[in-house]
Image (tube, rainbow, N blue to C red; front, side, top):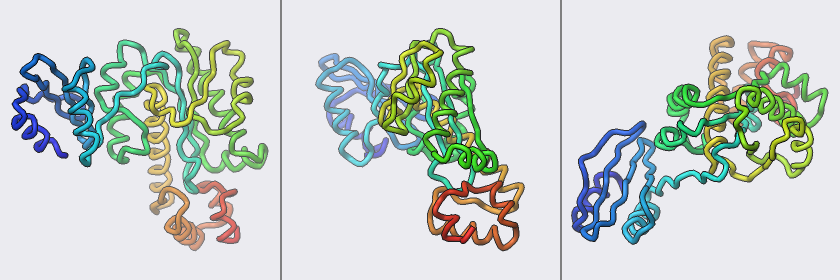
Length: 289
């Protein structure tokens, strides 16, 4: 259901709708039932919805309506860990480009404005929107970015021989540096990248904070913000690579990526490939490098 159809549905069902007001990245209205029940509905430019207000029959009906007719409602992020530092990574599944880990802490006074942005998992947001949202997140949050470009990444992988070990080092360093500026943080929440949770807890033990790993931790505000920033820095580095090498580096590890790698090797050397790609990927073996 698109925005116009939703507004028409409200009128057909005798619901009063306030004048539309602009919010960051979207539009908002207040919907009032004759009984006095009311909710606020935010519609974001991404096509997502957020239904706010006290639990009521009206809120449930509208939430179900927007969640089952094409445009799923933008569920509010779980607030259980809003005052934790959160971290996420980007680039670990991409042959080209860096590995990025970002830790983020959202001051309490910024929580509402961040939620109003429609903040969520970066994988569900277009690249251009990532760039736009990241600027605002960086202005509202404290963050620490660890960026491992391909050449140092390859050297680190040769040293450790394990991606999870690299991620552990990067998440630890990001949170350690961020905590120097965010002493009010109540804990650390990491988007789970390994089943060996105790290893990360041990490396972060000097901070003396609770350390939790969660699957799909982007459901929590600090990790959602970190997810967007990590993707932003990944895209930024990829842009710089494209400018330097005068070619487009596709994301992921698909057949298109393999073809781009072949094109790169027609112009540049295997040694230079070390500066743009994660060499332990299967793509390298397919290319014979």
